Length: 97
Image (cartoon, rainbow, N blue to C red; front, side):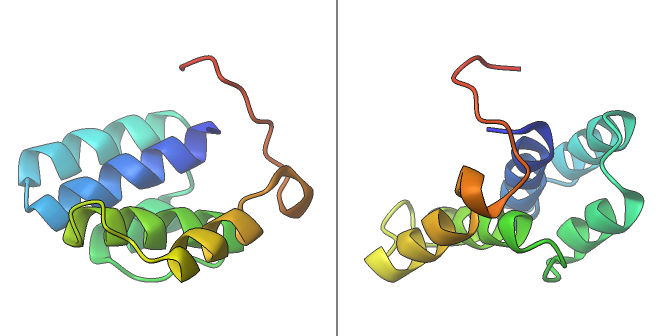
């Protein structure tokens, strides 16, 4: 998963879990990794993102956290449609960063 998407997952999950320390830590790391400040601010506020692929990551993460992993097929399909390599400029890798 591309770096910006990883940060979106970490910040979104931290916000939904109510961990202020985690939100602050993941936000700082994201900003140092050059995630745009407006993206970090939107993630922290739970607002939709302009980037369709990152928004799909944010939405799926939110569903996974709030529904304890039991997301419906439509949410997964929406994520897959928005976050495929053909729909994004992301480079997918199985290596962890």
